Length: 69
Image (cartoon, rainbow, N blue to C red; front, side, top):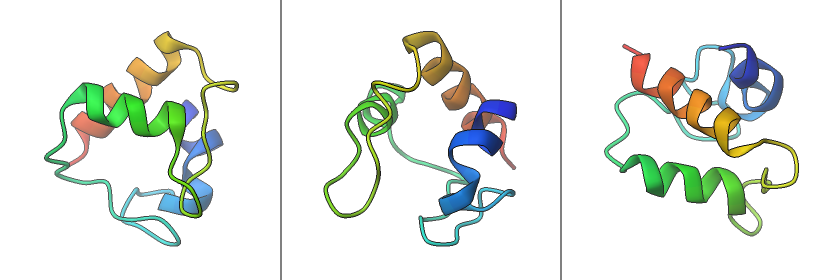
């Protein structure tokens, strides 16, 4: 949660329900798809975090996303 709040909440909201970025509850993407998006971003829509977050940190963010109800 700490990594999410520090790196993602400014766009996805502190509750991950969306703001500038989409709601992240109930994602139907695979973990690899989520990891790829975090690493590479999406031009004009999401910043790439490959240089900011380690593979382990990305795994931790994904685990947090999976815990959202």
